[in-house]
Length: 232
Image 1 (cartoon, helix red, strand yellow):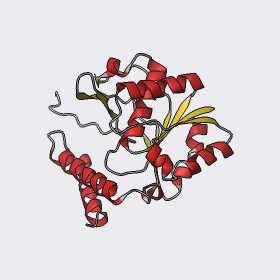
Image 2 (cartoon, helix red, strand yellow):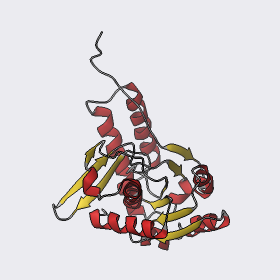
Image 3 (cartoon, helix red, strand yellow):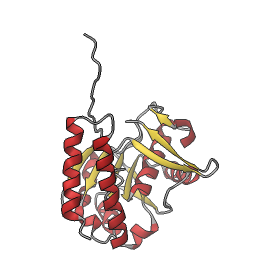
Image 4 (spheres, one colour):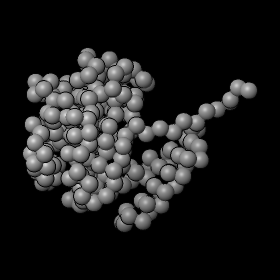
């Protein structure tokens, strides 16, 4: 019998959730035998004081690390290339991304280039990344994008005036540390728009043609969670 449809559910990323879990980042880094870490973030997140405790944990655990805080909103091909070059020059063998979707996607793609070479433009589309990216530990500071657990990365291409999508299980974060404490200093406006982003993603996924009971159960729970948590 030939199946008419096969549903596959896979999340390559290992997810840890809980208050204070961001400060356990040394554990996943040790699990992948990392020695030299590039910490990827942006100036806003760093200025909010969210990066300093992460730096201290890396220092206490004996990791050599550098901070790359040049990420901009909707990072482009050039921004990813600069992050990758910083990682290569430093000799990084792992990444920690702290922030929203922009720092996390930047780290994911820089990690992809570190093991695969080339540029972002070589991997546009579905399953174009042949080798697994260098390990990435993602610590989100907003809700909504889901960049820390998805196999998608969205990178802008100013030359073509469009956004490029890379979809591959080889270009995703290996670990996601979901810590509610990391969202406490998020400005109200950002909390609102990323909360609505969560709602839109959940509704979109629930009604899409590829939805099936397992994904729809997660969508419904996300919708309920937004309803409880996103107070006007």
